[in-house]
Image (tube, one colour):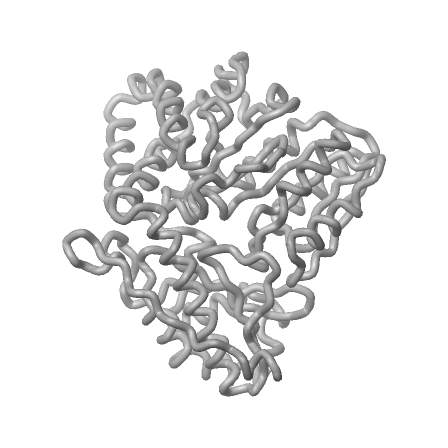
Length: 409
């Protein structure tokens, strides 16, 4: 009996509503003419938070002197409001523009180990992996790529990464949730092994803030970076860097400013004339979602909806191709799922980005398309504003078009 024979019919969760009975989507300014299935890439900022950030910018322009003199204290206050959502102490947390910017801080500040190797995985986010490669060149070292099967569970995935450790390993970089493959990595197990060998460990948690209540629970790492603008719905430009352990004193912002003599994280609170209203508005997004529905409700809704959407769309492809389009992911993550695309979609010139742009232009869908190990995928996301109709519409209207594009490629 095949997987197709035993597939269980998915059950659609009910849509979330605002307290006044309107659809949850009414809290966001997203274009209603589009289907928004790609929260994982750029997030979506609620209208109330956008308006609040605009008021902050107006305050900044009304009196720049008053604004910038008082800004470090406001950054500290915002850190204190964000920290509980991550399960960390406010003094472990600094604001950065985004997760990649936080990784750049780590790459710049970790002490040089000439000739050493940096261990990454084949699921890593491209920009961060490129940063690791640049650091390796500066060190006169090399990058070792751990190959982790998409279907690998925690033990197999951890073993694949740890197997690349050696006496020359100077840094390990692993995603908490992988961007191209929408899976978790066993960073707790990897971190324990790295700490035992005194190897610095950087966790790229770009997608993870607000996905779970305590994203750093059990994770022993030197630096953890994440984006508040993704699942947390904060304005873009709101990222976090969490530093704990022996390298805390090494962490400095990429911009040297008047806060440089201060300890971590206060030195990150004073970086000249940046527009950091996204940092100040970030806790408002986190609190708004909590006030409207509660994060636990949104997490459960998003998990069920992403699972439903992936099943509906995969089954629609299967009905046309006769192939199994569901994906065996070893460590799934709540609001993100993969659907296998018919070959050769995502594998030609421009890869997934070319298909993403065509789908937006011709089908009116904001989606994410990726590839891994020679296979193309649709990476679905779900959030409070999504409904079963978003995925049912894609299955009915877009899947036949994509199957046609594949057959003619």
